Every structure is written in structure tokens, then in C-alpha cells.
Length: 109
Length: 112
Image (cartoon, rainbow over all chains, first blue to last red; front, side, top):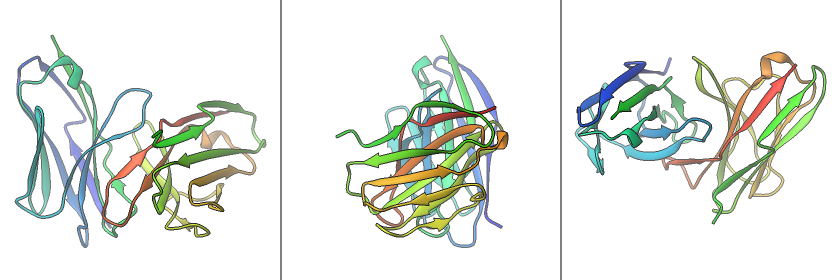
């Protein structure tokens, strides 16, 4: 059965304190791994897609990496506005996504 | 471009009542999805459509029906609402297989 597990469930950082979020997955055939950001009361906002092991993508203070079993979302020198829930999802079939439960990130000044 | 819009934003129903949630997209995307999001459960797929006139069941389809009569619209129906259907519902649109999905702002539904 395809599974996506995100850790930690919640993370509290001081502004400027870099860290990483983990997404481990078991899927019969990976067709893409997706990272989304979700703010309270809003829909998920697309961040990155990774398709093959070794691939990396960056956007501002965020960098996503992919291995054969997991993905990391690295946050460098975070700011309070980076506070959100970060969701990871895999696409075993090419369309429907299997989502993890998310990591709730709080960055304090 | 509005992207993906959802109507209504909030709704309260009594057990047994029916309603339809509307999702509209202006991106001309082929694939559309309905998810529900519950605390501690993450996003779960209810139904999806890979093109106008097509629908398919997702992970949690029971108690819901869908229709995709026009490419830009995807409707989610609850024929007889139950308290277990209290949730936040998200619609998403996707250009093609393996592409990212774009989500709407959500509908918060409470069934009393």
C-alpha cells in the first residue's frame, strides 16, 4: 500500500534557525513527489515537484531534495512569514495524489 | 485569472439535507479532483475526473456523487448529509498527468 509519512508533526523555530522537514514514502512506482504550503483557512499552495532521485529545487529560503525513499524540505534562515503547514504528496499513478498529514511549522521572531 | 474557485465558502446543514458544492476553473485543465481534509487525517481523495463527462471514485467516495458536464466545472453532491461529512472540502485542477495540482480556497461544511 502506498504511504507517505511526514516528520516531525510540528516544529517550532526561532527566526534564522535553519532546519529540515522529512517526507518518507513507499510507493510502487513514483510519478512525482510534490511539496505544498498551506496557510490556516486556505487551500494548499504548490511549491515544488521532484521526479527522480538526486533532483533538487529551490525557491527563496526553501530547498527540496529527493532520494529513493524520502524527500527533505530544507528551510534556511526562516522568517515568521514561513510559518505554515507543509504538505508532501506522491503521485503513484500520475494523477491522484497521496498526501502526508503535514508538518506544522511555527517561526517565532 | 481566478484559478480555481469554490462555492460556497461556508455551509451548515442538518442531518439528511442535501447540497451541491461547485468548483470552477478558468485554466482549461483536463483533470479535476475533490478532496476532504480532516484534523489528523490529511487530505483524502473523494472523486476525480480526467476529462469532461468522466468521473471516478477515490479513496473515500461513499455518500458523495459528482458530475463533470462542462470541462470548467466539477460538482460534488451530498444526497443525505451525515455528521461524519463535516469537513473542509477542497477542489483541485491539473493540466495533465504528473503535473502539479492547483487548489481552490475550500468549503467548510458542518453537518449537525
